[in-house]
Length: 376
Image (cartoon, rainbow, N blue to C red; front, side):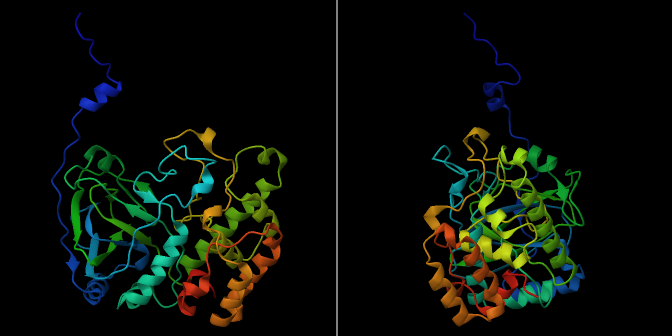
């Protein structure tokens, strides 16, 4: 009996389709051996800081799909012993059990929001010139929202060019889909014992390339003034929406995107430092991404929504710090104005008898801590 041909949409048919081809990857063209050289080059470009996203990649390779023009990708590879790998599955509160191996962390993202604060703080403390780079590019008084980690595990010559071209876009001044026909793939190679600081232009057409073997971390500074203020407004506006849902019986019956107890305790209009303090001490995801887009947590692909608990809760596995000791340590290390929001969180949520996920006194110096709190 002759074998049946697979239907066009079947899994067998898709498996036989050749991967869409494109130009082979080339080594990144603008890579410096010092942070100072990167800063000098960036200043000479004359482009505003808000057009650039900063990420740090560890040892290995990393592809970037960009336009072949000056300033689309700028990197500096320097000696560094910091581990820039995120811890997968720290967001285990999304699921009641182990239905998935990646806790929704597909697409090369690792949602270790708490670890991002720790690693960026370590990088600022230990990498000569990094604090100067951040200030030179993003200006005095820049602030630091927490971000995610990223990971790659695909040979650099195995890019899916159909997807690269389809997903071409710009993020600045707003997100917009673009034609990706002129994109090229540039590879940044980082040797052992080094990290690469990469400035990726968000105002020129680019796409998400998946080739590479390195892990890394996103840093998304906000310049003082309009950029930081907009992030604060976006955070507070989404919090107010969450509060409205938390107090609406009809919305409460549905799956929600937040920790209801905390939203009700803080009320509809908490000071933005209260929201950040809440996230720090309980290891919660942000209310919005640095772009201002709502952080949606009910899409744990590839599993079905039925496995989602229904709302975000702190992960008990990472709640290990005694709150009273944390407050005491913070008062000894930081100006009291920086500790006030944490004391208030303790007052409001203390009756839940939960430990905390972080002791900021063990992680931050006072200046970096104030930047993470967007303290004015």
